[in-house]
Image 1 (cartoon, one colour):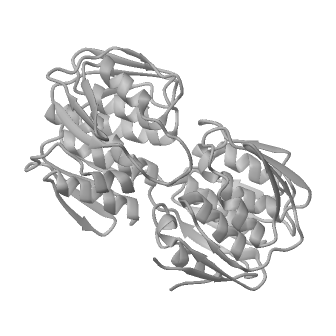
Image 2 (cartoon, rainbow, N blue to C red):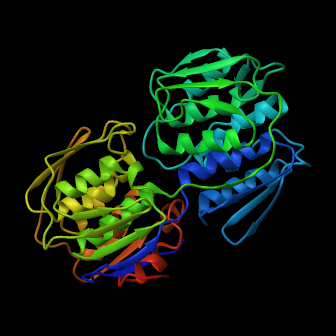
Amino acid sequence: MGKLIIDGGKTVSGEICVQGAKNAVLPILAATVMADGESVIKNCPRLRDVDKTTLVLERLGCGVKREGDAVIVDTRDMHDCEICEDLMREMRSSIIFLGAIISRCKRAVVSMPGGCPIGLRPIDLHLKALRQMGVEIREEHGYIKCSAPRLTGGNIHLDFPSVGATENIMLAGVCASGTTTISNAAREPEIVDLGNFLNKMGANVRGMGTSVITIEGVEKLESVEYTIMPDRIVAATYLAASAITGGEICLTKVNPQDMGAMLYVLSEMGVRLHCERDRIIQTAPERLKSVHTVRTMPYPGFPTDIQSPFMSLAAMAQGTSVFIETIFENRFQHIDELSRMGADIKVEGRSAVVRGVNSLEGANVVARELRGGAALVVAALAASGTTTIGGTEFIDRGYENIEKYLTSCGAKIRRE
């Protein structure tokens, strides 16, 4: 396990081309197994989670190779329908393979998933929906064993607009007989990206980006070439990195229309934003202003994934900010580490009151999950002195060469 060493106090200014979206590429890679052929997935970021996903594909019997920013998946020799326990424990998003494997093989075996320890993320919604579609499910000794001689569409209502459950239903529904309707579906842009990919394969999915998704089952899907959308969470993280250091930054290959809630909060904190079709130019004020209340919500609300990096902004803003986490109950693990750097944060239940301080100080801190690790990087960039961040394996799950991109914009950051 490596460390990131950051000498703070350097202005982060420059231009960054935003990587492909982690939360879009993983379900799309899983979906490639549903076609018998070779799919080319472009703008695929180099991430630990992508590496684990390609390992799952290889264990299933698929051929996988990378050429530049493209991952090429050949599913013609796929022969297995089981994902081993070690991979499921390392990456919770492996559960997204469930719908895809069932669609192709009519059976699947997976263990209970793991991932970042940010709270309970039950897969009850996934299993309930799959049962409604004709999947027989047995849970034995930590494994989920599924069989479905015939998948059938149906009307499925989600008690919560879960992204993962919506994706699994979409994957199971595209080759099911009849029509599948998902009400209270997740509306995230990554859902739209998955739907666009499936439609390019020959599926008939409508309503992505709304709360009702309709899927007309088809008999066969074709392998295709597809380009992954930009990562809106990574984009917002780099905006935060520049804002906290008083810099000016231009992001390219980004979709500002997907980032409304995040850009609104940044504007409220005093940054100037100029948005074009695929660019964002941001200029930071001398000192950021506090934001009254940030409440995480499903899209189009404020994303839980950017709550912790934006809390680092609030830690140095003028005034008091309140963060309310409604999605994951353990997503405040970064607060103890920020406090070691001099942040003034008080937690009560799922609320955090952040009183801005004039300066943060470098310290030895540890990332305990992906987005909390990003928050520590953002804080360290503005802190006086040197910060050493352990637990980089979490950061590498979602950020491609974070030290390279930040160094190119003037930060002093290295990996050991």
